[in-house]
Length: 211
Image (cartoon, rainbow, N blue to C red; front, side, top):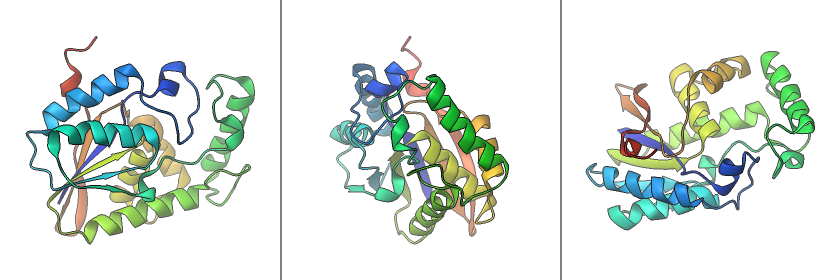
């Protein structure tokens, strides 16, 4: 099985450097990015599209599917890491937002997967969701799957695929900061001989002619 993970196109909040919530739509550039990606994916014999139900991912999947015409399944497993509600819609560089994020990172560095600041998803919950997605994929019959998701969750899934259930918060930070995930970047993992391996990461060839 080959799984083509795609991060959604640029959202309106991406463009404004704001922390997102589920109902943020794509920007004009994001829709253009998704259209170019659709042209590229039309050459790939995909069997099904799985997508996060968050609006920016859903819109990306629908634009792609205008070209592909494949079945779409919306999976809650594919949604982005749930961050504290108090930072949604606020600038990433807001000092209060940075203080919250730094506190979360400090506890990740302590490998405390159960720690929670307020109403966000804990690391243990986040990891569990990625592992559940991998189990679901392993049980499917399709040969080529497109999964439209979000940057942090794609990185968590990569970490879980390569390290397995033992992946720790500190491990995830290495993946989070060490692997770039761009809007409509294509990352492919393969399931073969009962193991996952990375085929490509954050491929943006379809955007070469965009400034």
